Structures are given as structure tokens and as C-alpha cells.
Image (cartoon, rainbow, N blue to C red; front, side, top):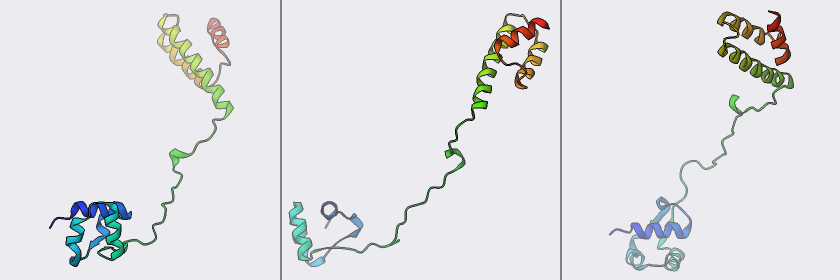
Length: 133
């Protein structure tokens, strides 16, 4: 006799998993007649339905999360922020000059190296230096 639906109802009513529900063989006819949650509770109190003990790990401990390399958030130093802003401005300026053919490829590469070495303080400083060259 298939009692899968009854077992699911009993599991839901008693707040346990389906695997833990055990029907006693002597009262299978009564269990088959049970329709409502109240019927299931009555059968449980009468002993027709029993709950198995939990098997497996008894103490389920919470896994400790370690802070990996990707999870560490640090503030970027002000010096680096300034360097990045100026470098981006200067590189876009030099790229524009190359596109307008005001400098050639070799000059472009040398200027990029100077930008990387922080030779220029600002865009104006870069343009003034280029006029001297």
C-alpha cells in the first residue's frame, strides 16, 4: 500500500523530514483514512506514527569563513589616487596629440615613459615641456 502522500503530510505537520517518519504496521488502515493535519497529530499522539532519531552528525557546527585575499578591502592611499588621475589625463592628452599627428610614435613612447616616471605635474606642465622639445 502506497502511503507517500500521508508520509509527506505527516512530515509537514510534525516539522521533520520524510525519512524520519515511521508508520506502525498495526495501524496502517487508520493512517490510510487520515486526511487532515489534526488526524495526523491524533495518530502521532496515539503512537501509530513515530519519529526516528536524527542520525549522522549530532553537532552541526557553523563553518568558519576565512577572509580570503579577494575579501580584504583597504583604502587606496591618497598619493596613488592623485597619481592615477594625473596619469589618465596625461595619457589621453598624449594619445590625442598622436592622433592629430603633432608627435610621432617614438616621441609618444618616450612621453609615456616620462608620464610613468611622474615627470609631469599637470597637463599644462606636459604641454609646456613639449613646446620646449
